[in-house]
Length: 340
Image (cartoon, rainbow, N blue to C red; front, side):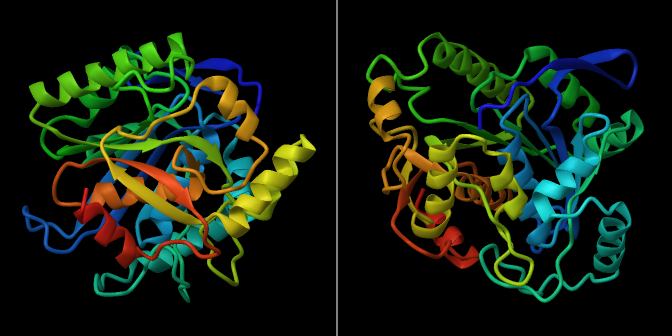
């Protein structure tokens, strides 16, 4: 989408300011059941932050909740209802709370809640925006998911997240970045100066993780397409069909809907090894839903991040597309990530 975002200052904790975007999620918090953890715990907390890429953050939040996690999406003030509508088609806050409370009583970690598989009962992500809720989430965070796709994460915001999270629980960062950033890819035209800024931000994140002995996994996405629609009665993995109504350009809407029907497969490769075309070639393929290694469906980018958060070792891989009318199952994602 080509939304026009306006920045605002969100004051968190003790006067610390993080710059975020109105109209999109800026932080996402989730708690989830974990089996076989080295620390013996059965519950973990994940916080996801991104300065933009609203749809990608929403999808990460929704898929994590679908996978059995307790999810809190921290958004700009006043955007809670819109965020719930995009994820689930409803802005009923009580409906979300009831779902979360119901799932809290189920501590059976053997329940199959596969990404891409239908479930009879599904926890929903709950958008929140108060400083108190943000602080409570960060202080118990085990994993941070950082979305740095189109806009680099400011070092000040990153330090705020890490300092608030502390060292007692935090053990992993998952970064959703862009293909072609680390190796100077893109034929010299992909992103230009923006790619350089993304690389600088990525290197800072790597350095901080190394200094704090925190594992980092990186999921690389290409040209983003698709992202909906989630249907409650079927495989509710994408955003609600109301997402399509927010796309004003006819050709973009057509490609988005077609991508979500015919291009749901994945073509994953290790590292940042995809040969990304230059900007002019990418513009020419923007109106195509044909599978390409340098395109990524938003649903699969989000699913890859959730899978990486659960994986027992750091990974770095790129997520391209293949022709398919079905999404990879959780078991398929686990097999993919083991090869990375």
